[in-house]
Image (cartoon, rainbow, N blue to C red; front, side, top):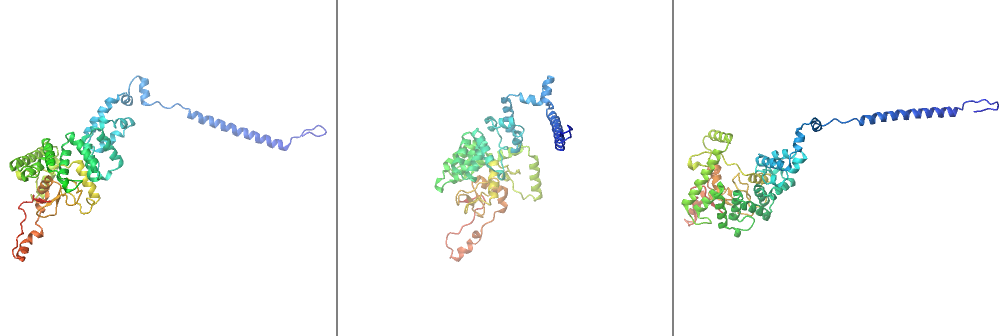
Length: 395
C-alpha cells in the first residue's frame, strides 16, 4: 500500500492470498508427483507366461503343445474317454478342464460314444440340464441314451409317445434291452387299455432280443413257450431257453472282475446258514444278483422318493432290480399263492422267486379257510388249492 510520502507497506490481505496460493501450488505438486509414481507402478511390464518364455527360448511347453493339437485329434481322444468313463462325474471333470474341452466335448462324435455308466444319472440329481444332456446324446445317435431317456419319459415323466419312440429307435439299432422293454409293454398293454395287449408282438421282440443274448428276454421267452403264452406251447424248447439264460448268467458272472461282490455274496450266504436263494438253484450254482441297468435303477429311485407309482391303486413290480410301475390298475401279474407281490413279466417273477420270494411266499388266508367254507355250504363245488410252486401268477 502506497502512502502520500511514497512509502509502501505490505497489504495483509495480499500476504494471506500469496500464502494460500503457495500452499495450493505445493499440494498440487505433491499430488502430481504421487500420481506419477502410481502411474509408473501401473506401467511396470508384466511377467512373461511359461508359454511366452518357452517360445522365446525356442522350445514348447505343455500349454502350447495342447493349443497346437488339431480339433479332430482332441475329439477322438474325448470320444475314447467318454466311452470308457465309469460314472457321470468322470465325464464332467473332463469337460470342466477348460473352455476348449467343454466345447469339443459336445461334439456329436463324443456324445454318440458316451457309455451307459457315464449316463447313469441318479434320480435325486435329475434336472433340466440332465434331461438336455441325455437328449443331446440321443440326438447324436447314442443308443444307450435313447433307451435310458425313453424309459424315463415313458414311466417317470408319463410321456408315453415320446418314450416309446426313443425306445423303438434304440431297438432299431439292435439294442437288446430296448427290445425287451418294448416286449414288456406289448405283453401288458402299458400306456393303454387291456385290449391293447399284443402277445405275438411281445414274443417276437423277446425272440429278437434273445438272439442278441439278453438274459431276461431268454428267460421270458422260455416261460412263454412253456406256458403257451402268445406262442404255441413247446415245453422242451422253453426249457432249453431257460437253461441257456442260466448258462449265460453264470458265464457273465464268472467272466466279470467282481470278486468282491462274489465274496460278499458268499459270506452273506454262509452267515445266513445257507438260507440265501441263488439264481441258479436248479443247477446247484450260487452267484450274486445281476447288476441292474441304469434306467431300472433310476426308475426304482424315482418312485421310491415319491412313495410309489403315484396313481390310485397302481403298484410297482416287486422285483427290486426292475423299477417298472403300472400305467393302469391291475396291469401286472400277482403271485397266485400269496397275492402279495406283483410282477411286470414272467422273467421278473422267476428271478424274484429264486432271489427272495421263495422263502417269503405263504398261502393266503382264503386258501386256508377254503375247506371250512366248503364244509359250511354243504360241500359245494368251487374250492381250490394253491399251486404247488410259487411261480404261478394270475392277472
